[in-house]
Length: 150
Image 1 (cartoon, helix red, strand yellow):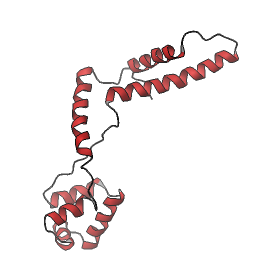
Image 2 (cartoon, helix red, strand yellow; image 1 turned 120 degrees about the vertical axis):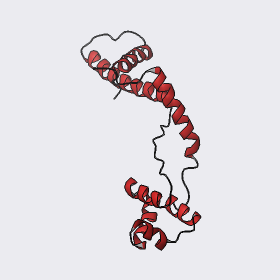
Image 3 (tube, one colour; image 1 turned 135 degrees about the horizontal axis):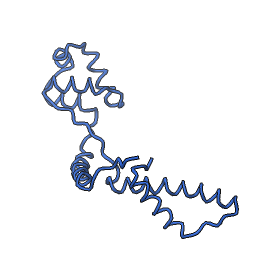
Image 4 (tube, helix red, strand yellow; image 1 turned 90 degrees about the vertical axis):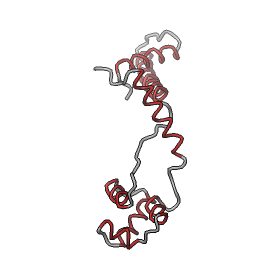
């Protein structure tokens, strides 16, 4: 299997982009949702926005509720944003930096793999040698090199 991870330069670029997004993340949510927030900021009534997107006002009201519930489609968000001359900004912001995430996933898989292997070896009366932490770290490194952390 080929390594599916990116090179160091690409990972550094990803880290920079994610850090920029991370600083915006806290400001990304507004009470009542962005549709209503921007509609009111622009002085649009439900009926006026509905007219701009050729939908009934009740659909706009439902869209505002679905956005707050996290049940709105990106397609509808984009349609409403375009009608208000806005952009929809959509991203995934990892909770950890990419290198840490990859390493943690590899360590998790290595730990589970070695625990399983050690159990079988003990059942067969074979001795497991070497400190567990070192063995886990070595296997994790191999998983990363193969691009096989999942």
